[in-house]
Length: 214
Image 1 (cartoon, helix red, strand yellow):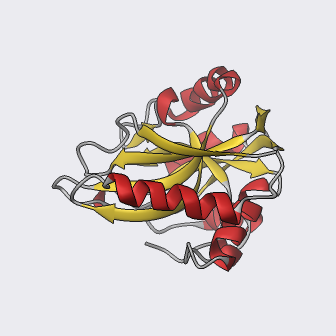
Image 2 (tube, rainbow, N blue to C red):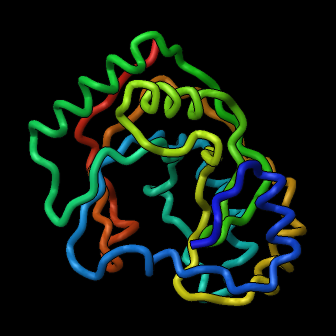
């Protein structure tokens, strides 16, 4: 995996000049059963039509896998990863810890605009301080080890199922760079179990807990 970016502008500039192949997203995951327990913000249903229209820009590239509507989300942080689903005690502990860390968090707005490209995915940039605040509180509480300075909250639109030169994708993303996908009010975070082997990734997750915001 290439180095993480510290800003969306840095990621886009790198993509425009990139000559190295884009990376296989699925190759990062094991071939056998695997599960990730983690916090995410499901995308509002009102965003789905705009996402689908944007995905049409690269639909003819067979090495690009669009995210299905049920999998659209803003990722916050993993709690654990294992060959077995998490047990009830681990889930309960994760909820309790997050409730303490997010005790005074208020509901917040997110705006999705501009297409961008990371090393292994097409994304929509997310505007709003809410996701970064959630992660920062988890890090400060010792719950997460994610590096906040390279945390760029985003809505993944598609991933790459094989390495490929970026030129064909660049030709399709530049014209839709300034797309407006919409906005949503976020009033809670979901704790989910995600099937995360190469063959099960993108299957529906299971919501096992949540934390509501004031």
